[in-house]
Image 1 (cartoon, rainbow, N blue to C red):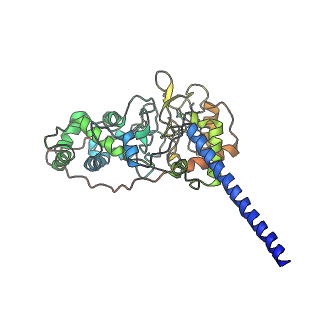
Image 2: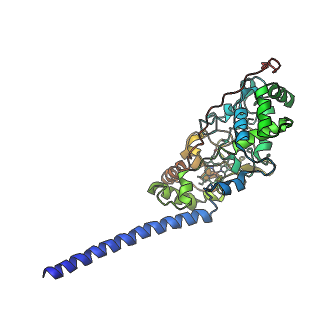
Image 3: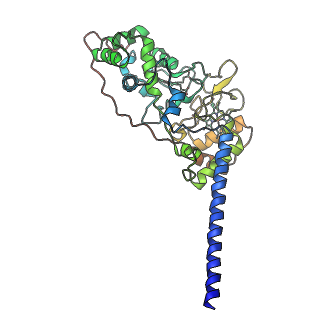
Length: 352
Ligand code: HEC
Ligand code: HEC
């Protein structure tokens, strides 16, 4: 009697274990399925291996080294690259604020607003963009960095002024020699190239990357559901690759966009717009090229209306936002650099 009771008990126990195993397996396999769906839609993780990452971001002509990164970091925070001596790259691409300024329209020299009413995009993960700027007019970070220093409504400095400022500061001259070669000729281009090397280190791996790399617990249930809705809606048609954006795509600036009349930006010659990265999107409001939308849920619904010509329900928009928040990544630990003192010959800040 006890023997058969024992047997029933054991069988029951085994069945429960079997049931648990199967259900865990089902959960795991639906997670794997979700990972595969995301990958199939070309959403790509930031590589975990340093070598693989360097393959994507490094340039053999001017490879990343610690000395260049440290010098580039100083230059990124250097207000003397601006005519007024007040504005650095960090003024508009605040590294403590998701790489943006948190204002609608970028504001630079003498409080001038961007003439097209453009919003400052983030510098975090910008290295993964296929093009830079909202109209994609720049092919890479080194080329891009030359623009804002000279733009009259940004840092407003001439190439000559920038060169005079930097070469008149002995510590900078020494650091360029150390980072490159003893006989290096400091040029405006080299200054921009060095800033770009620092920017290449502004990469922020998130829990979403862990998930794509196979850690099925990296996202919670709601975030997974949000990702699934994001894929169902077709958002990954444009928000894909490592940047989850970064390529030129059609954007209806002329007809459907609610705030189309704010500013004169109409995309490139083919009316294409550089798709912004969705990484750290929670930290980079306001949204869209003219910084007109402050609320992420509203941005998602507006995207549905413009890009997919469909109304996204509040509920679905909320789910997508829950997923988007999982894209907030771990920032590199940046120690605010001490900048070298000016010399007697350093051109003074110009207020006029
Ligand atoms: C006055 C604010 C301001 C300053 C200062 C500024 N930027 Fe920008 N940055 C912007 C705006 C606005 C854009 C978009 C402009 C456009 O698309 O025409 C932009 C675009 C960029 C982009 C392209 C990102 C993308 O997703 O397309 C990078 C990279 C960048 N800036 C880096 C820098 C660096 C490096 C400096 C310093 C040398 C700098 N910026 C100084 C406002 C600023
Ligand atoms: C056809 C390509 C395309 C599709 C599909 C698409 N987007 Fe976009 N997305 C863009 C472009 C281009 C922009 C920039 C538009 C602008 O500001 O002019 C953008 C902007 C955004 C922004 C604002 C980003 C910022 O930093 O300002 C968010 C958020 C966003 N998209 C989310 C989504 C979501 C969620 C979906 C799916 C419902 C989606 N997008 C579908 C191309 C696309």
